[in-house]
Image 1 (cartoon, protein in one colour):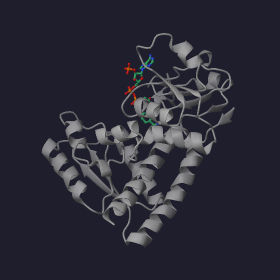
Image 2 (cartoon, rainbow, N blue to C red):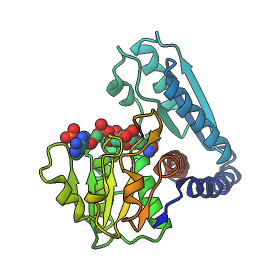
Image 3 (tube, helix red, strand yellow):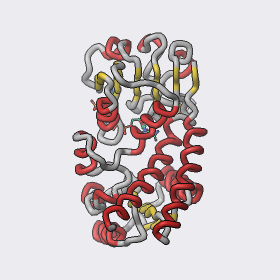
Image 4 (cartoon, rainbow, N blue to C red):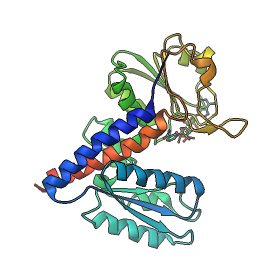
Length: 285
Ligand code: NAP
């Protein structure tokens, strides 16, 4: 079994992005900029935001961090996002989710223009993905595709099974795999015979949110297994949706948790920001 090293791959991508962002600066006389908005003090969100800002530094991207108090009103957060939407030094806007209770996340996210939606969450970007048009793709599934590409794992004609159909992972993952010529099955909590469906997978992507849910008896010999999950096991230790210990003897390729898909998500956020910046300049030429 080959372990897919997301940490090392993400580090290479950040180094490549540094070159790209320096070229941007040379060409256009300004830095690529990412604005990150954090409302409240959720500890996990604080860690994510810190990691994103650190990633920006490594990739030569200027970060604008906006920390708003838990008590911020809907209007205050919307006003900030609208101002960032107008700011020409900001090429990407990220609002860290979840937002504190009482705030309407959909309305706040709707203030981010599609061109600066570096998370790829908005209807326009999801529509573009579905129609195979150039847009911004959600970072986590995009990171999975990048891992497949960099490990030279073919997708065309392969049976890909995605377990999970969320808007931010499962759904865009399925669309990306369809666009990459795989034959795609999407499974979810109402799927009958989940085990049989999984056993047909040449490429199995688990995005369920249940610790060690995918066990060896659900995996075909030699399958490529991608674990998107970020869960806690019975001892509170970080683990994935895949039972790594049993699946490692059956899979041909496997992503670990941590160190697999997770680091790729931030790398793709930075990549999406570079792309948004380049696209904005192409448009203004
Ligand atoms: P989500 O919104 O809760 O979606 C989970 C999906 O799994 C749903 O489609 C659900 O089906 C399906 N599911 C739940 N129980 C199932 C079962 N028993 N059998 C089959 N399908 C089942 O979660 P998410 O946001 O997509 O995240 C999934 C996992 O990825 C989580 O562990 C999350 O922490 C992790 N994640 C990691 C990253 C990263 O950077 N590595 C990024 C995002 C998310 P229904 O639609 O029928 O409810």
